[in-house]
Length: 219
Image (tube, rainbow, N blue to C red; front, top):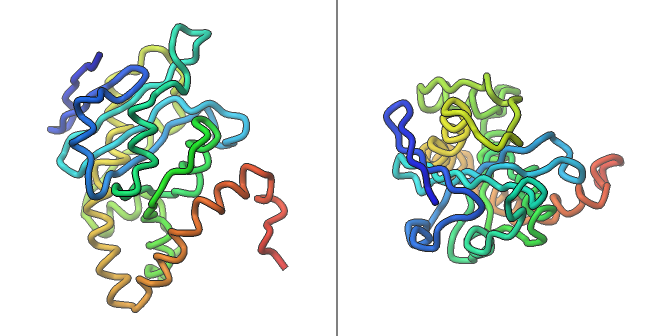
């Protein structure tokens, strides 16, 4: 069952347990995805929310509830079907973490993948500010709030403010990618970016195996 909320002129649909099969056809081409979790350790912390947008000003939030709290946990076949669909490109900001969390929770490899954070680091070498808020401000002239980033995403009832925050993390990714894709082409680094994107699922798996510290590539 879906609940529709309105915030800042956008439409937000909150779905319990899984994406409705009837809306899967809305996601084609490139879909923006983000996650909210109980913490930043994919091996320890629970995945609570998966946000998606087709770039049409609408966000779909899938709330995952553990069986012990009356939910279905990772039993969400429609969402998983989308995540592994090779015909749909998944657009993230900091894909390394999100892809690892999705693999840890669902046991699947998400792909193909694009990451705006990696793209930013490849072309915005004049700064060390590559957070989503910084990118939205500089490239889009949009201010987004990160105030609720550390709120309790494991709550059974998410507040309208939490839903609006979660939606903001995916609603701007298509526009950001358009800007960054143009910069990658201008600087002659698109092929390098694509190679990095292809490697991201392996990098996420290495993190889950404990190769984040020490880094496998560290000399």
